[in-house]
Length: 507
Image (tube, rainbow, N blue to C red; front, side, top):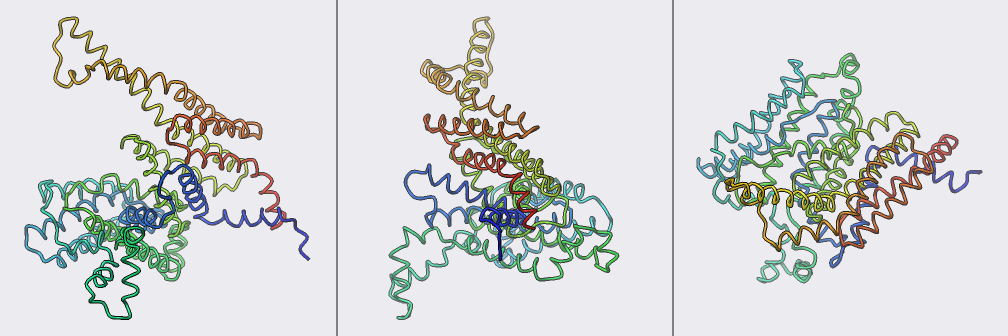
C-alpha cells in the first residue's frame, strides 16, 4: 500500500519533471503564453491563426537552431551559421537571377554550398584539432565577406515563385481554389468547402514554413534518439576520450555534426527566401546568437553531452515570444540585443545549477530570474524616461553652442527641439520617473538578494514584483507577462527545500 501523501507524490512528480532537459523551457512558454493571453485585447493569443504565425516566424531560425544543437551536444560551437545563412541566401538568389540557373538547380547549389562549408569546418575541428570557436569565428567573417564580395552586397530582383514553397506558400490553397473553381473531385468538395469557409479565420496563415519546421524537428528528433549518430553525438559530448577508446569514430561523427549544422543554415536561408521578396547578403546577421540562445534556453548544455531536440524547439518558441513581447513594448533592436545576451547568461547559469543539483543554487537562480524580469519590465519606462532626459540635455547643449556664437553641424541641428516636443518630453519625464526609478532600484535589490535567497527575502521580492505589475498596468505599459514568469519563479523558491527533501524520501 502506498502511504505517501498527495504532496509527496506531487514532489516526486515535480522532481521527475525537472530532470527533463526541456522542462524549464516548456514551463516558461506556458507561463508567458497564459500571461500574454491575460493582457491581450482582441483576438485570443491561443487563436490557431496566431499560433501558426508564431510558428511561421520561428521556422527559419528553428531549423538553424536544430543543427546547432548537434554541434553543441558534441561540446562544440558554430558561430558562423548566420554568415552561412546570409551567404547561401545571397548566392542562391544571385545564380538564379544573373547566371540563368533554373530555380531547382539554384536551390541544389545553395544546399551544396552549405554542405561544403560544414565539411570544411568539421575537418578543421575534428581532423586537425583546431578549436571550434576559432574555426567558426573565422567562418563568421569569411562567409559574410564572401557573400558581400560576390554579390556586391546588392539585392537581387524578385525571386522565382518556386522559392515560395519553402516559406509563404499555403498547402491548403489548391483545395480552396479547386472548390471555388469546381475542379475538385466530388469526394474532396466538402473538405474544400470547409477550408474556404474558414480561410480568413483559421487557414490564411497556414504556410509551408510551418509544415517544414515541425516535420524537420520530428525527423531530427527521431534521428538523434534512434540512430548511431544521436547516441554517438551524446557520447562524444560527455566524454570524447572515452568515446574514442570505446571504438567510436569521433572524427567522423564530429565532422557530421558540423556538416549538418551548416546544411541547416543553408536550408534556413531557403526558408527565409521563401518569405522574403529578394535575396541579399546581409540576411542572418546575429542569427548565430539567436540560435545558440534557443539551444541553451531549451536545456542543452554548452558543456556537451546533455540536451534534447524538443528542448531546442521550445527554446525557439520561447525566444520568439520574448522578442515579440519586446517588439510590442516598442523597444528598439539595441535593447533586444541586450536582452538576448542576458538570456544567454541566465540560461548558462541555470545549466550550471542543474549540474550542481543544490537546493541553494536553484533558489539563487530562481531569485535571479525574478530580478531579471524586473529589469525587463523596467526597460520600457526607463528607456522613455532617460531618453527624454538625454534629449532635453542635448537640446540645451545645442542652444548653448548657438548662444556662444558657434556653428552647428547638420546632425547637431537635429538635436534642437520645438516647443511642443519639449513639452511632450517633460510630460514623459514626469509620468515615468517614479516607476522607472522604482523598478531599477527593485532590480538592483533583487540581484543583491540572490546572494542569500531566504524565505523572508522571497516574500519581499514577491511583493515588489506584484507592485511592479500593478504599476505597469495602471500606466498601460507592457511588461506584465514577463513579471508573471518572475513571480512564479520566486514563489517556486519557497517550495524548493521542501520539494527536494520529499523527493529524496520518495526516491
